[in-house]
Length: 118
Image 1: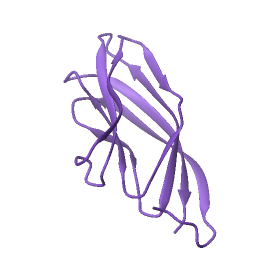
Image 2: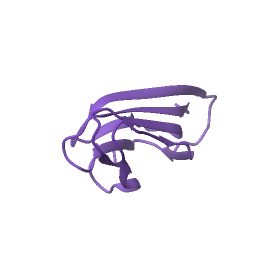
Image 3: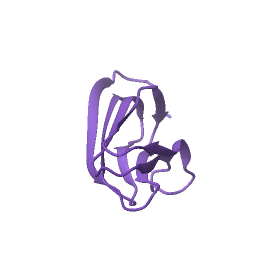
C-alpha cells in the first residue's frame, strides 16, 4: 500500500480500448506505491448486438484472485453504459475488462486519478 513519506504527484489520466473481445484487457495496470481512483468508465457497444461484459480487479499477473466490480453486465446493441461510482485500489493491481459473451465489439474509456508516492 502507498504511504506518503515524501511529496508525491496526482494526475488525472485516461485509458481507451477499442474492439474489446473475449480476451481480458487492462483498463489500468497498477504500479507499486500508487493509489488509483476510478472516476468513470464509459462502454459503447459498436456492432448492434447485445453484449455482456465483466470488470475485475486482479493481482499484477492479471489473472489470479479476481475481485468482480461488475459481473456479466448487459449492454444492448449500440447502447452506452456509464459507471460513475468512484472506487480506489492501490499497488500493483490491474483493472480488467472482458466480454462475458465471447466474441464482441465494444469500446471503453476509463478516467482515473493516479496518485504517485514514489
